[in-house]
Image 1 (cartoon, rainbow, N blue to C red):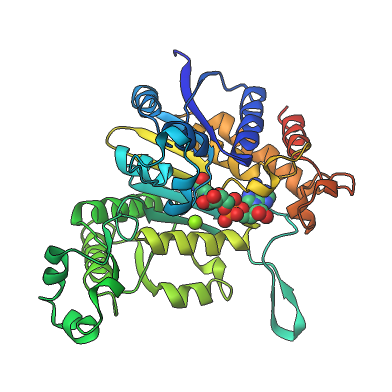
Image 2: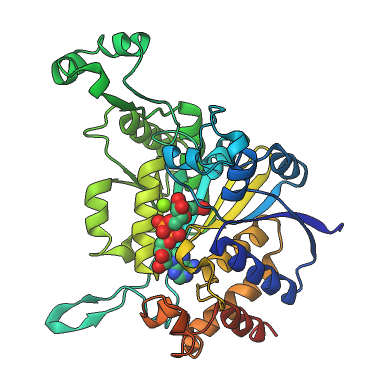
Length: 399
Ligand code: NAI
Ligand code: MG
């Protein structure tokens, strides 16, 4: 088989180091690929007025598989002031390149596995009967609709006549907001389409079926958000009944789910939600398995086969310039394993996954987060592993 070309997009801050270390692990595990670099992030916003240049989109279009580190985002007013002088006053408006990437390629299926690693000192524990301590094993995967809903970008402050008068046709708008001066109103829409909703629901059910999960939990709020969550729930019921009779459909509200996930997280398997609630519930579960140093993410468009794999953490600017990098590369490494799975390199994915699990279980090499230290330049002196040392430890277990 011809060698794969992977578009590596380090982005900003710690995105650069976690990606570099991950590629080192991939190479040590015997994954043969060529890497081309895709520009993305803050530097390109400031220099070019575009954090996601067309040349990066072209590379992804061509090679289909991306590994992404993280980017720095800032509110649009602040972003405007950081443009180079030549680009100031050109009316450029900043928007997140990663949200842009998802929408451009229709990467509407986002998968975020949250699985306990044995021996991770950050694992969630709870009090059991008679003052016992329990450490439930979590094996959840969140399917997040990745392109619509509150991230759709259809929003206004001080809406125009057309928008305002359209809203005024809704009796609840008139009743609840009709007396508020228009310039004091901001509106963010939550648009769900049947097509995208069906795609994420089917992705979740198919995953459950193929991987032996007994249930799919829809985590929305259909009792209150009747149109969007309501539509999703109704569609989930229909799809379950017609095509997945052996898989149970559970329905939880996002607020209650956030409470239950510290009560009985081991009861959940496949979870499916719209964009915002999927983001929230996946961060909640990630917190139970070690937090941002462990939370991975895959986003894909099954029609085109285009997929981008990334840790869920951001660029953590405060750690970006440390002489010795202290951040945990595992979230990025696990994301790369999802990439390997996706392109059919399951053996190498398993090898890396097993090596990572062994390092965590052994407990000799731990980054600062795993040692519950505050992130500071001296943590390595105090016994925490650096980013490189963690990658080295995983590489040493690959044999
Ligand atoms: P963040 O995820 O960058 O960092 C939050 C904190 O989590 C860090 O200060 C650190 O204590 C911890 N942390 C993050 N990654 C870690 C790792 N690999 N190992 C150990 N500890 C880790 O989120 P924050 O500070 O809210 O945002 C920083 C920048 O990143 C912002 O500009 C934000 O917009 C951007 N961001 C980008 C994302 C992306 O590229 N997908 C996602 C989230 C935030
Ligand atoms: Mg998030």
